[in-house]
Length: 237
Image (tube, rainbow, N blue to C red; front, side):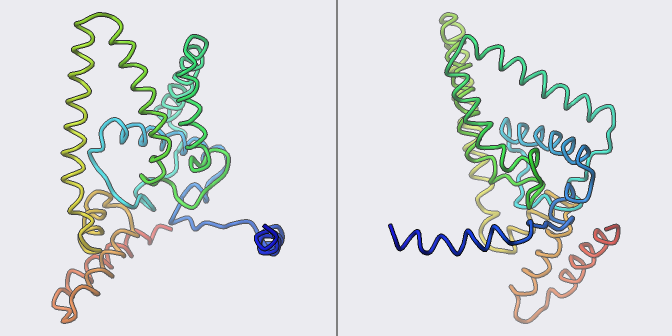
């Protein structure tokens, strides 16, 4: 224990005196807007997370500039934020009757909050990997809802079981179709550039992966095209 404490002290001293972390606008556009616009943007991104949890139709390993742009304060954005707050209020009302709802809600919220860009700006505007732990709580809430349906009678029980089987099969197929994207750097970034076509980082990484994958550089035209696309997306920064 003494050795661990000895090693930890210099690290804590360095972190305490070091400057605050800075994140480039191209990784997280929230870093370049006002506090209120940043929080509004973070709330809009929460809808994207919820949509991915419900059905991960489009998956990508990168959402950086300019795939997700900061909120502009439109009526639709404020309405979406109000809807999220209303949903939270409804959940809190339900908590009075179900402690399991409280437990799973708290798990999802606590696990998501540090990466949400709500209390402070992080190094990424959105990342599917950040939903892994919060999804445990969300899955728990789904289980609670299905259990409630199951208690309504045989017809509801059959319907909930059918829904679980259908979702499990659908998500399994989606996982199977996503796996080939991770075969190599080229397949990964080609998928990212297709799913997030406005991400400059995805196009730049694809250009680098293509260049490294072919020692003969016979694909130089495609490399240049991807690099030009990344440069064009960054011109507005």
